Image (tube, rainbow, N blue to C red; front, side, top):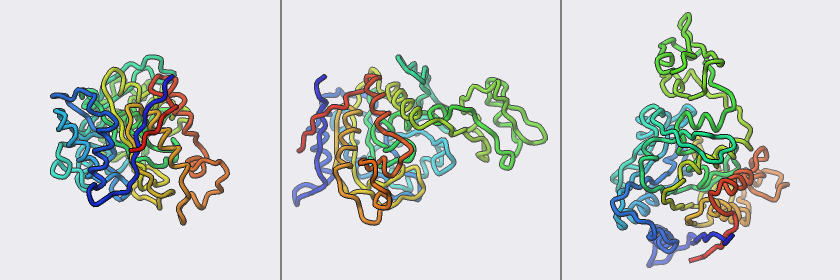
Length: 368
């Protein structure tokens, strides 16, 4: 198989070209203009950052991508789906508030923000996954599947469950509805915290399988009837219903690759990763730690697998930042991500993505 092309530029600037202009040149050189954007709805999948976290991508980078899509005749929007956990992005209203607080407004980016899976994380499309080992129908945010083109704009960083978060995680996990995220993270079914439950019965109304009952003002889930769709999690006003969070990391990584296949199959896509502020954990955290390595640069490719491998290789070539969690680890694995997350193996996701036909882990790095 021919090597995939991955384009790279560092973070150095000149008096004639700033970082946004350099990113624009990178994206255009990588061939984004080969896609027919004319009057096409274009979803730009991004992580807006959990409030309190300061490692997420600045909205200036998103504006650069938006401007290129508009220049090519497309109709762009920024998007992400609601979270499974309790936080600032659990429903569309809070999610929009968080995006705006972190600078992602139509005024700063030049386009609107649409939350892909709707108000409560239940607006989804069931997408058949051909050849899926674990997922037969992926549950993807409706607005994302309605788009004609998908662009992923990724902050490349560490992740405690998947090794790192790059293109595949941004797409596979990020585009899953709340039920989809639960399917990836859990082998079990949701449970109810009676301490938090107020007996409102909202969960019983949305359950299509009569699996939930309320007795003495407390809800209970009959797991023999529950199908694990996660809709009850979305409607609970007190976050009393929670996912099992019990899937193994290897299977989580494989499920994530299969979800990515569902999002990208049979439509144009393009991927951009910024390897800057490489925090040890996901931007879903309401805090961020010292970067584990110095800033590396910006990468772009049509191949999300090759892009992730190129970014991981680039990080692993970097010296360790003083005072970081990586410096405090034992450095016994010869891999920065395994050193900070020894309980997971990011290569499992890459290998499964290759098996699914998502891309090629062999790449040619082209520096501009």
